[in-house]
Image (cartoon, rainbow, N blue to C red):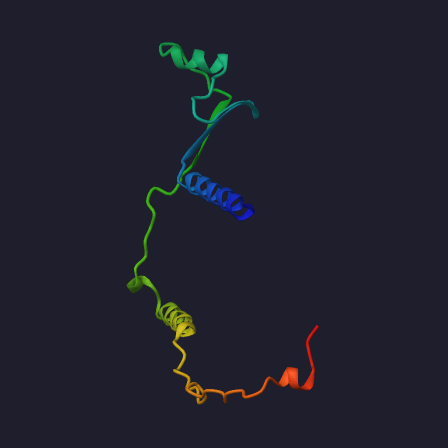
Length: 138
């Protein structure tokens, strides 16, 4: 019972690990004057009031904004890479072959053992020795 519960927990944790490794994540940060104003993970970050005015008025002279945006992108694994035996180095091939050979040799069959007394039958008892000597197990 304990083993089956631990097996289920372990398999669930491993499935979430595979899911997390393939997940891509984008984090946007908005700074105004060196101070962090807003952080957004899946949505766009909210802009300051000064930043919105300078973007909307294209006819006026735009002064240099003190605000800046930072975007951090964490790319997940898009494809699971499967290496073939030919992609390995020579040393890796030798180690893999030696490991496989030593593992397979653990399961060699035992030689057939010869039992010399297999067909021997014991002699027939004429008298009951325990009754004759009056020795009984209690």
